[in-house]
Every structure is written in C-alpha cells, then in structure tokens.
Image 1 (cartoon, rainbow, N blue to C red):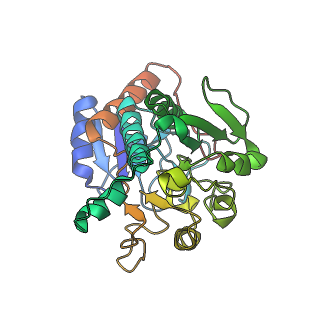
Image 2: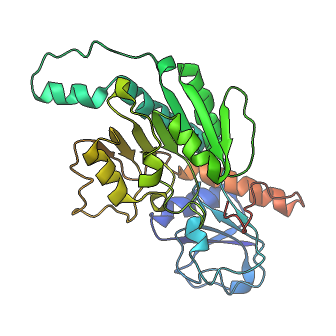
Length: 316
C-alpha cells in the first residue's frame, strides 16, 4: 500500500493528516511519531521535521515542504541524498503574501502607525504633506513567484517598484538589479525595502547595517521602511535596532525573527518603530497546501515530472 509520511513539529499535524487522507483516497497517511513500515513510504511532507525523520526510507521518491521555504529541510544533516525536494508554489499562499506586503506598504505610505500614536495621545494632528504611491519606491529583494505577484499588485496601487535577484532577470514594469553589486544599488532606490528571499548560506544576514546605510532618507514617509517576510536568518536584529534608534530606518515590519517564537525579552516587541507579527504573513492553509501536494503526488504516480523542484546547490 502506498504511504505518505508527515514530519511536522511546528503545527498540529492532525488537520494535515485529515486533509491528505481526503485528497489521497486509498493511501495511508502516517506521522513520523507513529509506527510504520519504512519500506512502504513513497513520499514525505514536512514542516520542521525531526532530525533524521526521512533518513531510512529506501523507497522515498520525493519530499514536499508544507510552506514556501525549504531551509527547515536543509537543516536536517541526515536528509537523504538524491531525493527531490519540492517547494510549495500555490495561489492561496501567494495571494496571502501579496496582501501582507501591499497592506504594510500602504500603511507606511499613509503613516498609519503615526496616526495610531496621535489617537492614543488624543491629538488632532494632520500630517499635511501626504505623498502619493507614485512618489514612493518599493524595492523587492527576491523576485520569484511571491515577489513577482507582489510587484504586480504594488504596481497596480501606483508604487514605483524595483526588484533584485541573484542572477539577471527581466520583469515587465520593474527596474531590475542582480548580484552582489546590485544590492547596494536597489537599497539606494528603495524608500521601502521588502525581503521575500529564501534563507540560504548566501542570503544569511543580508539585512544589515551595511545595506541600510545605502537607503535614502525617505522623509515623505518618516524614514525608510524595512519589511521582512522571508526568513529570520536574513536579518541582523542588532543592526535593525541600531538603525531604528539612529533614525537610519524609520520603521520595520518584521514577520520573521532570528529566534522563533520571538523571546519575550526581545526589545523588538515594544519598540515604537517596530511592527511584530508571528510569522503569519502567508500562512500555509492545510486545505490549499494539501491539495497542491496531493496533486503533485498523483501526477508523479502517473509518470509526470515534479514541478518546483529545489536546486540543492542554491537552496531554492
């Protein structure tokens, strides 16, 4: 009997089991905490699986990430060699991410957090110098499926959009930069800098003082804004705090952190220029993601190629 193995530690695995069981009638769906026959496992799906959960499965054909990122898989030093790893590219997740990015860019544009403060102070204060979206430049670090969708929707709102990728890429209506030399260049034209990057050895610590020093003053929105919806390992939190305190950054919207959950002792929680959200900018909805993964599995069983397979050399 064909069996799917779920390795999930960060979420309740039972909703995922139920959805996969419904999407794969006739299959057996087991958790890695249960007893099972390793030889019966054909596919695995994971979110922050236990170390070595997939290391002794002789007939494993593919491993699916249940979220947009795959860095959690590569942390497993016992991950089997040669087994394809597949990332999620799903319209539901993409739409959720773009909603979050557009929302916070608009909030920065309209100085919503400042007006929140005025309300708390009962101050009838009007910031008369209100820029239009077309006055504000948004730079996207990462222009894969998520970044491209966000770029399109930001463009609809009127923002001037630039993008950065590791290798040269062209996107209609988006000024593109690439490579190490392109990082400083895109920072220099970004009033709002949005990170939608995977975490790899090359991108770790990207969001640091050196990068912030290239950003413009962005006085129209009270200073440049950093938004990180990628991975916590992209950012150097000490540098973010220092840039906020010095005025180099006007605000930061952080959905991901170096340590998650964010420790209660972190100064980010109560910093007046920081918005904290609990890694939910684009949640993995069990119905949508399970349907996507099940569709890939059934297609593979029909002899069709897997899509969105990760290049292990690049980590995405």
